[in-house]
Amino acid sequence: MAAVETKFFDYGRKEVEYLSQSDPVLGDAIARFGRVEREIIPDLFAALVNAIIGQLVSVGSAKTVWNRMQESLGDITPENLSAVSADDIQRCGMIMKKAVTISELSKDILQGNIRLGDLRELPDQEVIRYLTTIKGVGLWTAEMLLINCMERPDVVSWGDIAIRRGMEKLYGFSKLTKDQFEVCKSRYSPYGSVASIYLWKISTVNE
Image 1 (cartoon, rainbow, N blue to C red):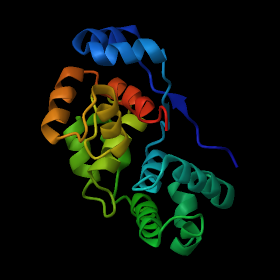
Image 2: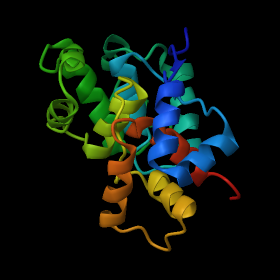
Image 3: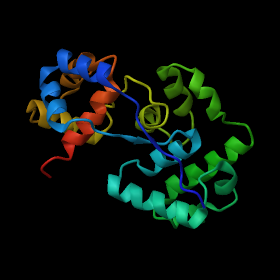
Image 4: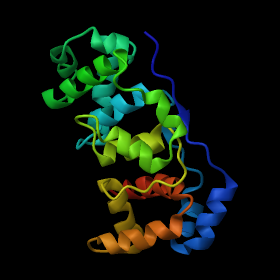
């Protein structure tokens, strides 16, 4: 069994300098932390399964389930996962609803009902529109695929608790409002994904 291939999100000086100038508070945090790496999964199917596992659970819990899936079920491919039952998938440590979603997704891809490869040619909103038609895949899951697989440059997810917590810590908001979020997000554009990488980091500090 080969582990799912990963790489780091690709960004550099251009993104960091832009964010530092457009948002000096974030810029201070970037200078303090230095380069923060974000591991991504280039394979669309494996990344989508990984995002489904990560729904509404801690990063640590999701990682445990992800590793257990690879150890128990082998390569994370539609062929492998459609050959096992939803019960087998569920036994890796997730709720049955997610296991059924992953099982049905695997079968639909093999049957040609879902074509993930087509997503690479689509703009972000079209990717989200397509993915959210899949049962068990919502906006957060689609946005995570945009960042953690497709390396799209400008994704900041309101639905991500850690990103909201990072903003609250960074700017001293007691409870982040949607309006405050949108103001911050507009300052980060067109490099919101790199801002997200730093907000995730900020959210974990001193906990």
